[in-house]
Image (cartoon, rainbow, N blue to C red):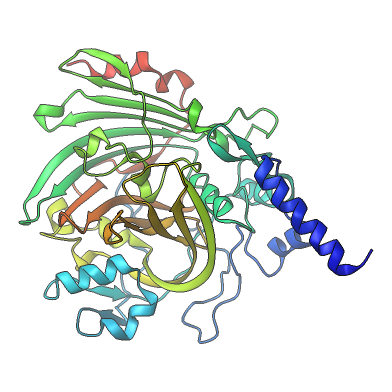
Length: 456
């Protein structure tokens, strides 16, 4: 058989597999072997960049910073670092190629207050050995299969499902199933900021989290697809005290279940559509369900394009955002206080999402930036039906050597049209921040448990 004909047959087979919903398998054993040589165990490039501004990954940060106690304020391991340079409205053009459109829009809109302080790049991302081992196995055993909610991973467990991604969908599943611990507890506040710069408290919340996907004693064969559990209880402000929400997310979004408890109704209700561009109750409707932690939606609404990698300035090692004692020191009048946000130069995966024909969404086009080391979606830009930049999602990754992980805490979104800001998981005034827990009982994440917690 001639080589051109063989290539044509392979291309046709790939197209048929996608069109007909056949599974798409992982990479070859030879390619997966790169995870033990030129790539990190999580799939990032191990080497630094040519000019040395991005160093090589040498194992990440796994030694807890002196003074740390579980649940307490995570100290800044790089408190002595000084900014290498700052980017603001005056020198924006010089650094524009390494900044998302949303950051450039903020700099232009707030020339007197917004800036990006760039610190030395520290490749601190790390994970336990069992996560590395499973990521290596996932590289060859995981594949995408079609479900009623679009392409979902099959055969992946307790690691990055596609450490050497070949498509936008694979990269986005790496985001949703990224390592950040198995079980933990957080206390935090959430705020909206009006166009006039008024900060409004909309959440005083306690959250319990669990990722069954990362249970060390599980396996791909035992895993039923329920990968993310969360129970959220509001303790304030007074008008919202007692409200609660419990979610059990499945790989197949059609099987995801979410319940809410509203004190005014004094009963638990199942949400019919906790998905996509439906406004979230906890943000007073400012952000949508698929904007939680950058992106948390379904895959079947969009066509996903893996654009490739590029060097970008992104928030990273954001422990300094936890240092101020008051939330108001971090949440400024129109944007986060630049004094407490650390930016670094990292390689990121770029993924673009375009709304599929026949689907609807308030943001038909999006572009996401994903850190190659941790698979955290660090920034997202979304455009509306008029083609104007409408919203930007952000996350602040924090070095957690005790886990070990680079995990996002504070996240939120800028509305460029309404000129508003929503920020949540703001922990500065909390005594308990990101506390690693022993595995919760499954009954914690049920509507019955939530009803008991929500009563006041």
